[in-house]
Length: 488
Image (cartoon, rainbow, N blue to C red; front, side, top):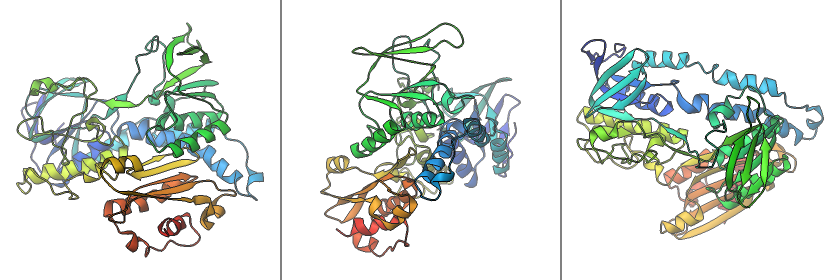
C-alpha cells in the first residue's frame, strides 16, 4: 500500500518494504490518534492493525457494553418518575442486541479504514513486531512486509484480558468481555468472575436482559474505587436479583461435554455455581508479548508495561525513537486517557522530527500527558453510576497533601429530585486544605457521568475554591450540588 498522505515522504523499495516517517503498531483508538496527530504535524504514517481498525472500545468494550446497558437504564429512569412509570413496559432483549450490533457496524471496520484513508494514513493489515531499530515486520494475509521508520515507531497494542490461573478454566470455553459484548443471545444463567468495572457493568446488563447472574468478587465490588461507591453499586446489583458474593475465590471451573454443556464454578472453601456461560472479567494486562522487543535489547515479561515519560518516549531504548501510548504503558488504562496520551505522542514525535522539541517536555503542554498522574476521570456506567476523578483521600495523604473532605447528599438538590423521584446519591470532594483546591471528586447516583467534566476541569486547572464559588450552576440542575460542596 502506498502512502495516501499529502507529505509525499513515503519511499517504497518494492512490494515488501516501505519507509515512513512514523510507524504505529496498533490501530485502535489510541493508535488512530497517534497516527492522526503525527500526520497533522507533516509526517507520513503507516498504521499496522491485525484485527479491526478502531480497536476494543469500538467493537468489544466501551460502545457495545454501554449499548447493552442503556435500554434497561432508560426504562428504570422512567419508572422513577410518577406519571411515566405506569407507561413503562419490559426490555426487549432481541432489540437491545440488534441496537448493540448497530454501534459496532456489524463488527465491520470499513468506515474506520475510510477515515484513515481520508486522513492520509496508510493502514497495513497484519501483526506487527519489531525487528531491530526503527524496523517493523508485518505478518499479513499476503506474507511479510517490512516497514522502516525515519523518526519513530509507536507501540499502541492496548491490553488483553487477564486470565487467572484457575484449574480447568482454560478448557472451559469461557467468555471474555469480547464474547460478552458480542453475544448473539442472552444466556439463561451467567457467572461473572471479577467485580471491577467490566464485571459489574456486564453483570447488571445481562441481569436486566433476563439472565440469572452470579457475581464473584475476590475482595469487594469495585475495589479500586472509594468503598462507599462500591457499596452503593453492590446494593443495586442485589436489588436487580444478582447473587453478589464478596471474598469469593474460584478454585476450579469445569465445562460439561457438548456444545451446550453447562459450566460449574467451584469456590475455595466450598460451594459451587452452575451456569450456561462464565465470563472472566478479572482485569487486563498490557499487550507486550510477541512484539519483538528483544531485538532492540528490551527484555520484558509478557504482560509487563512499556514504561514511558510524559511524551510517550520509552526511556529504556537508546536513540529516542521508540514510543508507546495507551493501555500498553500501564499508566492510565482507559480509552479516553489512551487517546489523550496518543495526542501528546503524535505532537511530540512531529515536533522532534521538526527539531522544535528537545528531550524534556513542559508539563501541561500539548506534548505531555501530565493528567495521567493526578487527574484521571473514570465512569462506571452501572445504575447507580459512579464518576470519579483525581485522588481519593488515602492517595492524597500518601502524596503528602493535607486533606479536607466534603460530602453532600445529591438527592437533596432540586435538580436531582426532578430527575427522579426519591433520587439517591452523594457527592464528595477531596480538597487540598493548604491551597484550597480540589484534588479529587466522586459522584454516585443516576446519570452522574454528566457531572464529572466540571470536576475534572477543577482538578486540572487547580482552580481555588474561592473562584469556583463564582461558577454559578443553572437552576434546577444536578450541578447545583457544587453550591453545597463549596459552602464549607
